[in-house]
Image 1 (cartoon, rainbow, N blue to C red):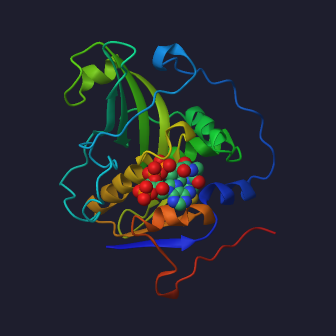
Image 2: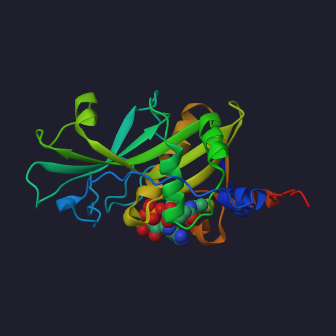
Image 3: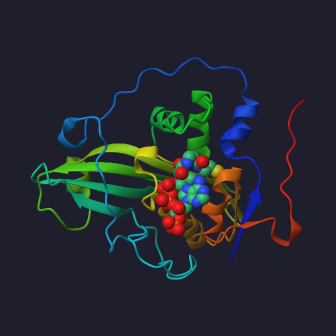
Length: 246
Ligand SMILES: CC(C)(COP(=O)(O)OP(=O)(O)OC[C@H]1O[C@@H](n2cnc3c(N)ncnc32)[C@H](O)[C@@H]1OP(=O)(O)O)[C@@H](O)C(=O)NCCC(=O)NCCS
């Protein structure tokens, strides 16, 4: 596999440059009231050592191209934890790729705003999500009741309130190449291995489709984040080049 990082501004910077006109503000977004004890503090989510794809305090896992499995899992529970203060309540971070329900662009906008990315035109964001080859998400599920364990299933998902806490998408020629865009984790959930798990899952999903030339555009401050996963800057001297309208 050849995973390539071209050191260059990130997708949102490029998009922002192309859409310098200030779009109208978005309508207010209804927030899920799914926090521990119903206050505004987000649930803390210790990583589980057994959580597939999440760091869990373990040594680095196998290479991304190892053990891909034949099919995409519908969803992967990356983290699961009980909320001690609320009996029977559990929190999960669930990864999904090209899920049955499209990702709500308003939620993506809210996430982008939370990390300080400039707003993009809503219709274009919707088109970008709709036309992406892969759209991967991380959702926080808060589940009340139940047996406190087991694999996620339709019943558990139906009973859970969900909040979007992470996103990545990839465009592709469906054969050789794919480019990953809009990698983002809600700041309340950063630093727990979720960003890494998200990108690794996306790369695996691409490899399962026999797409081995995976590129992305990294902000200078996140180059190390991607490098740790095996992405390279300027492999064999190849440079990313950009053309902008004057
Ligand atoms: C970049 C981002 C997705 C990382 O998500 P995260 O969940 O905090 O990352 P993780 O916890 O999975 O970190 C994985 C590893 O990368 C490191 N890392 C994370 N962010 C980093 C950064 N900005 N610079 C260098 N290393 C970083 C972590 O320390 C961790 O290393 P470790 O395994 O040795 O402990 C998140 O910070 C984010 O959404 N940032 C704003 C949006 C953004 O800049 N996206 C990238 C666009 S190009």
